[in-house]
Length: 192
Image (cartoon, rainbow, N blue to C red; front, side, top):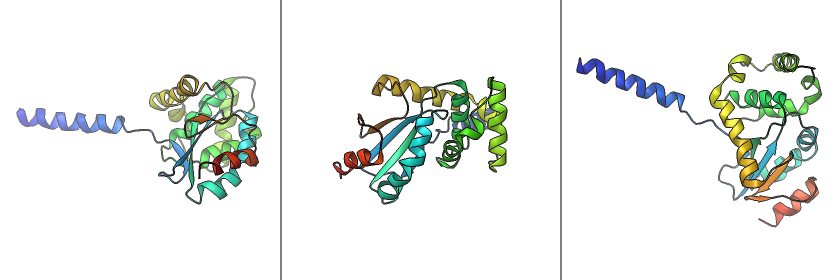
């Protein structure tokens, strides 16, 4: 009997540790960089998509790929479609930004619909067409990921006074200038 109880304890302990696996933050760059950029974004925000199209490539080339900085993408969904897309982007839990980048690069292909059901259908169709293999319903209904996304939004509001997207934080200080690569580069160069 003691052996059975012992085995059950080991089994439940291992199950709980798997369930409590930490959700990995979506990041790009050197994990040990002295410059840490946090980007609070909403996947349905056109200004966020513009950041990924016009600012992020140069930022990646000059600061992230060189190891000078790292960027952490934080979720700040502004609507239910963005909330579901955030859960999907986070779902693989590999820290990779591929789904996130694809959603921003092709925002107009999936951000539409007069109801959340229609928006979800467009998002599912887009992901399938792009070759992303994920269980959509499982991702959208995952309570741990949902809490993770909501906690990002709470953290942004509480600790950084985020009220719009994108909001950029550099080494725990809000970037207050117009979000162009030129302005961002100047701010980052001062920290090198």
